[in-house]
Image (cartoon, rainbow, N blue to C red; front, side):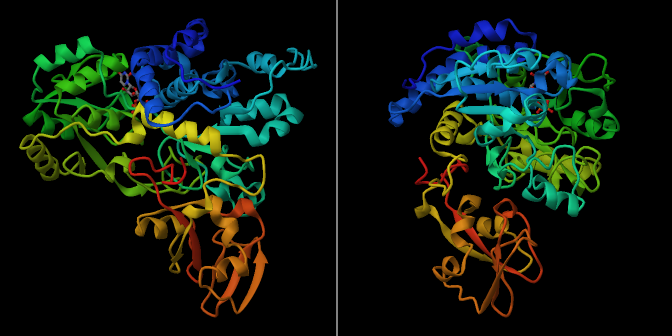
Length: 523
Ligand code: UDP
């Protein structure tokens, strides 16, 4: 049957409502219901969305399951991490609006039931429906692998793994990771790196899934807010006590200029001048942002949704620099993550947006903080939100990924080869950097097209000699004597590594402005 863009989210609610695991997710989706429906309508008006097959999609967020032991669903209302729940909510809403058949699972019994097994693991019946696509996370995937070792292999190529911070190819490759001591509890899954779906565009080896930034309010709230002017008010980014520790001097400086509000859980020790609202609903956070001029980062949590919400609601963001940059090598938080990305501030994505929206500060340098604050108070800014973080942008992106991205058949037909642009990366430079410097993005799907004498000759590289090997993460590449090295193991293709003595030949592509996941010919 055909997928028809839905005009209501009502069918989605009964299941979400009945499950504690989905309570926060339900609340978020419902608060954005009208906006989702409107976004579906406006996307349909721009593109022909009629000729699509309705897919059966299994959604299993391991993070909300009781079996994970994480208690994320429980702590959602009392200061626990919400970034992943934001992303799951928005993905579920997206799939529903796009008209697909959703099968939601929040436990191992749910998973067993969908796959057609009894709780004791014996086949019960043939599953009524086969999943065309499965969205899970690393915890969920491990549950799946453990409970159904044979079945999971059958589904391997239709799995998409939500993975906020990303998995770089060398950590993903089980043998390479072991031999090179790149150990992580989340690595060594041997998937195609693009099967990992990230929160922000991190390594282009993964797919950027993203989420939605709340920026529209219900009409009643909007009206109410239009009558209140933006006050000399700052909102502090910090839900729990540990983010506030040692930040008194920094907040004292800000307090000289602005009234300070917070949304910290009520047990948090905070300076007496802070007006604390406790943990509140997303829409109420938005209201506070609309009344404030500055959103104050305190250097943790890293790379969350909140700073983008602040910009989208017209606040400037104080973005603390991290010196030295944090990575798995020096940070407890990133230690177990399967990548070696260096994080240079609390929020590198918005760092690139820059002033007058985002102000980099050293929290312990009073002069610098004061300079940023006076500049912010001397100018007014308009709300800022890239298209890729709107409902319509997410619908567009996920729809194209569902229709076009395919890891089950070989010979990848997407992105279209016409989008390929080849760039050389000087020794010591990665393809991620080299493509970026020319205003493009590295596209790992194109590596195989360059991975041969002929492939390189087509792009003006004449190899004197060559070899095929699996001993590097930077291939195809050549050295100073025009000796070419080709990759023998496709799982070792990677955008992010460099080598001091090899010149990389990089597959790049263009992208739609503010929709970096898609090339211009991709849609
Ligand atoms: N948020 C909320 N209530 C609050 C504070 C924050 O609902 O009292 C929301 C916020 O609007 C954002 C989400 O929590 O949508 C995630 O926030 P954050 O950036 O802190 O990410 P996390 O570290 O929780 O993943």
